[in-house]
Amino acid sequence: MPYDTRRTMVFCLWSGEEGGKRGSDYWTDTLADNHPEVTVTNYINLDMAGVNWPGGGGAPCGDEHGGNGNCDPDPQPDEGGYPKDSEVWPMRIYIGPSLNYNKIDQPDMVYLSQWIGADAINVSMQQDILVGSDNNSESTWKYDVWLEEDRPEIIIYEDTTARSDHASFQDNLGTITLGYGGLVDGYWCYHQTCDTLEEMEDWMDTQSRDYGNNATGKNNLVNSLDMITWWATYSFFHMDERPILNVYLD
Image (cartoon, rainbow, N blue to C red; front, side):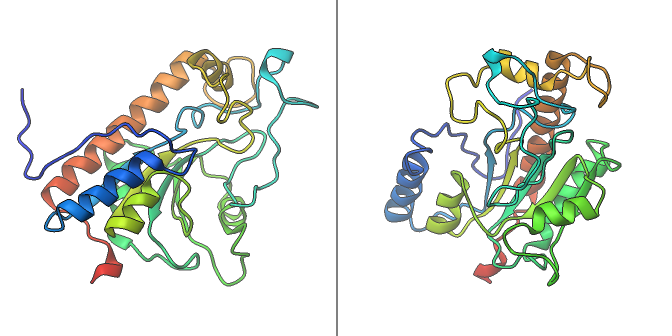
């Protein structure tokens, strides 16, 4: 059955993200120049969302997987402070633009994402909103608060930095963005040719690990991508009926 949207929805596959977000930057610049009358109210970004909860419990070992030592990802936070350790690899829902790490700047988008997770996706026990405080370092606050909240497996937070194609929409169009991601730093195949479905299945396998639901990597990967797809779809439906505007444009 066809679904009639109230607003135009555009689905894009971007090229050149690693080389400077070339595809999304060109698209948003061209739209702004040629159609200044068009407002892109919301943008949903999916990037590196393959390895996350319900996977976890330790990285796959073996020479074909890379890594070193005990084969686990480095449990220390990276410069951007993405939360993870050797056991829990959260599914990340990141929102922006945001100028502050110690308060919520885009509350409508944050709480919509939380409500969809709790009501439609039924993961209220796994999810939490991360907000920093003056006691946290700006570089590692996400990791610090994640530990304080007992390492939730799904995290919703506002990001003061944009490292993917959503930055083009924030910077060039003033659009509020919502993104889904998983394990990045610590995933050895990040931006490598070994980033295949087979590799992701190995990472997502919890059959032989003291973590998770004792499921195959394929089952966990399917469940994760299914969850993200429905979460994004519900977000599309809600924002089609009631767009959420960037508070900085008020």
